[in-house]
Length: 454
Ligand code: UD1
Ligand code: MG
Image (cartoon, rainbow, N blue to C red; front, side, top):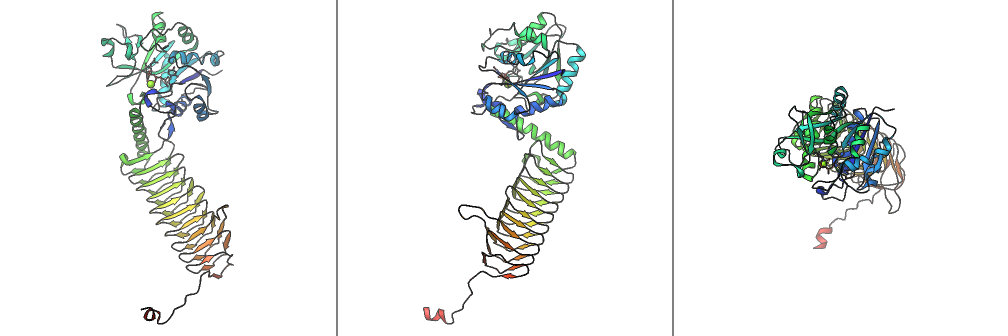
């Protein structure tokens, strides 16, 4: 039987977000807020995880499919009521229940681990994670007795002026021994300004019974920040972004301008790669060592090898090999694989295609649904004509061929190894290896035409 279970509260609508999307699904660092919390709970060793869903339950469940169990809170009657909904799923569980909120995306697994360890070491029935906030407004205040012991938590809306002046706040994160938690929850009521069943009242109830209530203060108050509004969402994004950028710099990545660089949490980058300003690196992007990325570049879910140079490009769901030089103004669309040393740039789009080693597509081309070998030169303005209005067709271009400028390759078609295509051709038939394919009207010159015209 697992020792630690986590209950993550995520049923609220998040009224202050003014959004059709449940609050906990808003993304920070390219990841829904609640997923950050689930990941932190996993890190802390929570084998059993229950997410309490309500508003937008289906979309939250789809997002976390297979990662947690779910309890449904049909009416949002408060945080205490939300935890009660998890009780049936915990009836055979006898360890510690960690309660978390789905709207604290900056939380680290290390902090939760520390909270759990201190809760155990203190032998407490309840431990609340607190933080000292320069501006505590909006949070519940932690009220201590004459000996420094926690006596209760008061919500801002219910607080007296003296209580409001306290800057130690409730982060909304706790450890409880299961039996004590549900016994105390049975005693809470909604006699408060918000007419809600507050989980925070459990602390006061246990303290009154002289049960051991403990508090652990988080050193970094950013970490426990709760996101209730779009402004706070932007603040959280900034904190997470800087955290990621600092981590990468510590690992040997140069980030020229942290303020204009946006890197999602799960992106990895090798050492001695330089990231130029105005660059977005998103999703599951993996970048090797010694690359130069940006300026003005957006990369999503793409794998990039070592020593690649990519500037002014947009790439999504692609693979870019070692030593590729791409840009400026290149669009690499899904399922594009560029092998080592490919050179591509100045207004080129590639989609669902493979390009072999050291092939060059230097200017103004569209290559779609194409298999290209190595050492190929694609002349300026080459277009693969891949779509007949109903179906997409593939083009094959074999090793070492040379496609002259402004050619149309009408798919399905193949260009054999080492073949040449005359500039300005429209190629509709396969070209054998080592042949010259010419598909254009012959030029005629009409002598004296200009004089006759006038
Ligand atoms: C809560 C705490 C407050 C603390 C703050 C920290 C209570 C009464 N107050 O206030 O002391 O300082 O968090 O951020 O607990 N939720 C449900 N069902 C409900 C109500 C809420 O699942 O019926 C969920 C929300 O989706 C959210 C979390 O519980 O993830 C916290 O709710 P929220 O409304 O944000 O509480 P706060 O007012 O921030
Ligand atoms: Mg909140």
